[in-house]
Length: 82
Ligand SMILES: [Zn+2]
Image (cartoon, rainbow, N blue to C red; front, side, top):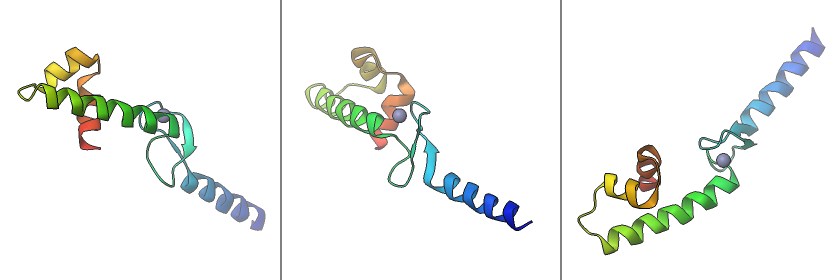
């Protein structure tokens, strides 16, 4: 009974500190972000690219961004929020 309890506690610790990346689904330490490090830097770069695209195309819509950058609409919106 005690062993089971300890094991359960251990599992709980693992569940708290690990998470699946919201983007690629890879298991990573979820203490700082819902994204893994790779996707974080990917997201930062894309977010920057989207911002500069919008700066040079003030009237652009999300659909334009999607077409120009080749990024799925869902991701454009996610990165815009972030
Ligand atoms: Zn990821």
